[in-house]
Length: 130
Image (tube, rainbow, N blue to C red):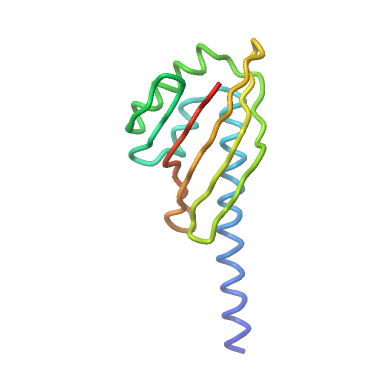
């Protein structure tokens, strides 16, 4: 009986972690699709490495929010499509997306995130290339 309850417990936590990761993917897609920098920033860690066009540095959550507000203002969103996503055993998350603007400019977005615990997943690195 104890084995069964342990198996159920492991399954519960594993599925909870998986749903948190899937939720993060859908949040990122939604936030890029709508150009919502404030909502996107809720997924940022305290310090994020960002390489965006000509800018490359470590930024705080608040600094990066301002940078993304500017990016979304200059490159108004039309669509964001997730092309590839990978969840590694060590909790690292990798996502590649294609961001298309209303002017039909296309950007490749690469995002790395880290799962801290069951409910907390934070973006640690973002790269945006034309």
